[in-house]
Length: 164
Image (tube, rainbow, N blue to C red; front, top):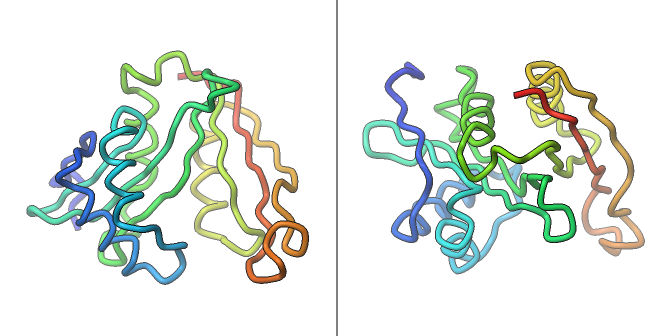
């Protein structure tokens, strides 16, 4: 896929169903209800980004400003279609999202990643490097305490301060 042919833009409610289908077709991701994705595409449009290629949704990042820390952009989920991987799309989406007007005051990015999710670790390590920022990690949601042993522990990743 030629990344220069991909359109990056804020999602709208009309994209909610296509985003839901994208996420549901990526087995590594936790699926959300279609209603949840509709809310992400409408209520959180300014802090989310969508990638389109030839009229198809091939990428989506959802995020929000943390209510108790509005200078922190929490990245909820990163989804890239299998046929759009390997061309730097996720990195481009994150960088454009951080450059957006709604995120100019963001000094930190946070997300959660399971220990074995190598692609996410690579993505957020690359982001920290490109933003000349520190990457810190700490346990936030424990497998037994928070997930009743039904999901791997989630590590909080905090990147910042950003230099963008």
